[in-house]
Length: 393
Image 1 (cartoon, rainbow, N blue to C red):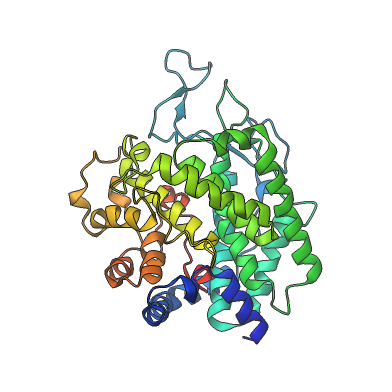
Image 2 (cartoon, helix red, strand yellow):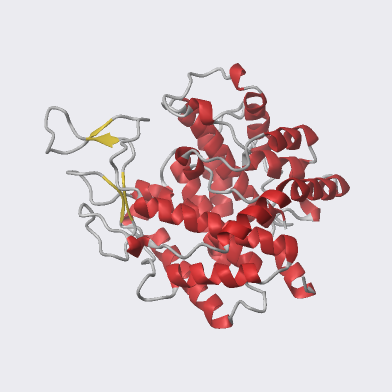
């Protein structure tokens, strides 16, 4: 790996020496993380090298109001009404309708997994074969006219008989987090062309415009629970890639003045998540998302890892609250999730990134023993950060 690439990786990874209370311990822990993940990453990357691209244009649904280049999904918890089978769907919160159209969501998850894996393998080895194959997928999704996805999300999480799309559907593109980060990690490689880099950046810039101006996006930004968190998370990730400092500043401010004060209780829990039908899974998900916001947006002048509200709410308190119930789920004080209770937890990002940031070995030990390659579709969908190496730098 050349010096330029190393510097780029250091800038792309948000865990920096200035932010770490024990830099020597953090360095040792990063080596530990790499040692744990290396065999899995290289095995997955070998398989990834054989995979052809598959974008939203590979499948369509007659229920979509969009065209072949538009991402389409349906509201998870909406079902046909037994009293009116052809009428508008009705909600069954927490219970996923298995007949929903999910092909685009699966394609985007696959894309995220492939780019995250290939970027991780490149970071470990410096071998540009991983970059070259990643570009095959990146071109298909963002550059090639026949297969590219439109940089908008007007038809996500539609509800039959009610809405052709909703702001709540914006959460589906959290799967692009590791795509954007993978590009940051790989874009200084010799085989990553300038035109390709510019084209990919332009796609994300266009999506950012939609993500900050469309009425659906405005609704999602104002969402009070994990949806509002994931709006900030996505804007932060895509603004980092495109160098949009204004949006990065807005995201930092929103984390401090909106997300923490309105979502985290004084004890570090998330009351808006614990009152849902999947309180455990939603709490894990929201803490992962807030942790990633701190990982991406912390700077020497504005360290979100150490930021606290006047009454002490901050990301460390959130991790300290939830960690005991990850180490021993039987202690969970709230109701069990109505679905997928047995499938959580897995190797949650907040454990590994928090452990390295705060030099706290027990969190890392717990992360090591959990599942690093879950297969349950619902778990994979709600674990958009699956490759810690590309975030640690």
